[in-house]
Image (cartoon, rainbow, N blue to C red; front, side, top):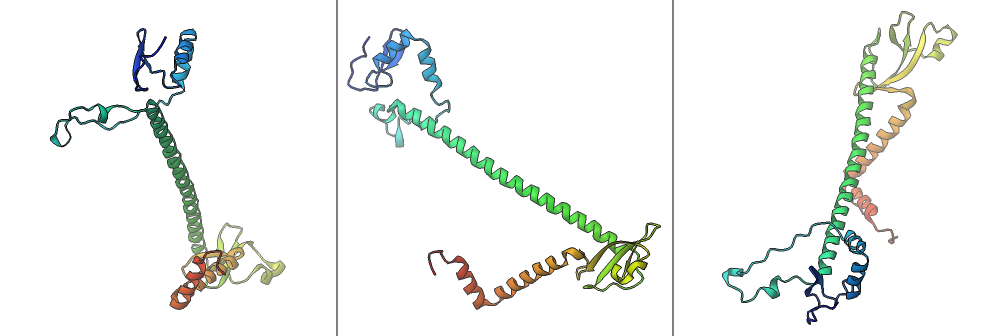
Amino acid sequence: MICCGCDYKYHDFRVGNHLRRCCGREKYSRHFFLEIHRKPGLLKAEMARQPTTAVSLVESNPQPLGLQMVSTYQTNRMGDPHDLVELATQVQKADEFTRANATNRLQTIAEQIKFLQEQARRVLVEAKRDAELHHAACNFKKIPGKIYYLYKRQSGQTYFSMLSPTEWGPSCPHEFLGAYRLEYDMSWTPSDKIQQRDDDISAIDTTIDRLLNTKEAITWAAEKTRPDYQE
């Protein structure tokens, strides 16, 4: 069993009723076809290893710019058959990378959505708490910046007092629920989070003051963007 003997090593030839690639290609050699005849499952296994992605080739035009070509063989012929395999492999890898990149970006968005959902839940919880505190019984005008103490009567009524449990001492008549500071935006801050809130506001004010100073802001920005290798 031999090939057609042509000089063009990618030329097709027939073996029996089957079209085969010229034995000039090592992958499709005469020995390979002999192995196919001896082992029919070899061709199926070989084809299974090939990429299954469809490759779109550029459409041919026998009359470019309205001029009829003498021969379209040199312009429209297919080159190395392995180029198609490599092209299909490249397209398949590109599809896989595109899918992976999209999945990663969607995963990041999903994490951001979960974070925003948690933030929204916390805002709603704090808003509900603030509304309940504003509706608690109180016999005096509440002043922003002051700390007030919440108590609960046996009847279930909640009320604010200016006296802390320490000031009441053992004679405190009702259940102590907590201490809250009224902020200037009419929100309430629990006593255990007052220091954290003050630190956050102080850091924000410092940043704003620094950015409002043009000269200092430029110096600060230059220091932040300076490469690590510079001293």
